[in-house]
Length: 373
Image (cartoon, rainbow, N blue to C red; front, side, top):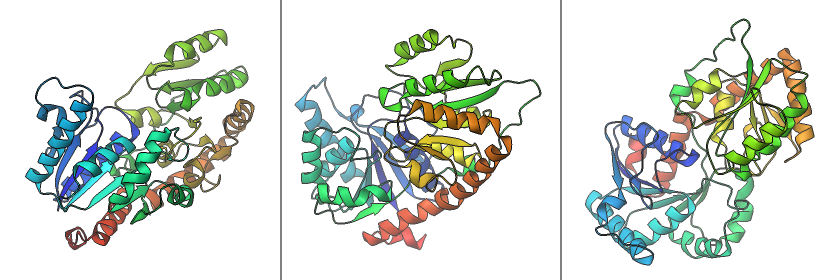
């Protein structure tokens, strides 16, 4: 089977991580895969790709220094030419802007197109313009995928006429499921970990405030927040104002997030909203006890309504501090949460299980060779 997967860039990010996981898995089983970075410059490929995955930057196919609408038109033409050259059996696109662009660019070429949302389309703050474009363009795709069941009814009302609206979660890579948490060495400090862009939607300020309420009670615990972004300066100022230097760390981006999780003893998701948060899924898969705000959407489904992780009212720093205190103080309950989380994630979100769901969707769209493999 020939697959084109289009995503905005291959820099660090949850959708990009999922893209790399899927294209590597498809290539490993013998599919011909072209990964297209559409509307960014060349940049960097943050995630490792298999040798037989062809990575194409549309920027390399656009001659001249075009800007504005001319740049978009040139990239539309370049993507359309790439589809003609590649002759794929199916096109998959990630993220709203890329979905819109590639649906329009590939119209009339006779290739089934799957547009995938990788955030919560009801809570991600998209403008009226983008909501209108989704309403007009998404019904032209052969299928649209969402990450969680709880947004499907409202989204189908917002965007009527979609031919196939399917829930297709992110997969957990096999490599992660083979990893083990590292035992804590005697005398070592314990870590609470969080990962994500240093952006206001992640609410790391709320997490830091919550940690400040328990830091004195748990002097052997630290908070590590991995990521980079525009909120760094304000978060550093907050850490200083709470006298948490040496207890709260902002070490920047990491290319080995699973290793950092494996060295930690608890995970926190403090976001205002998510799609299906990969960091929470990965922390659970590693057996970390996890605490998460019940934000739209994802944490409720991942934790099975709080059975496999602590689920809290969104944005409440005091509730977060109390929940973390209870978890840090009760090692037995903490380990129980971790065991349930690891088992549940492995059963529901393994790579092979999610690949099978993709194959079922491809078959529904007439890409029969997917099922024959």
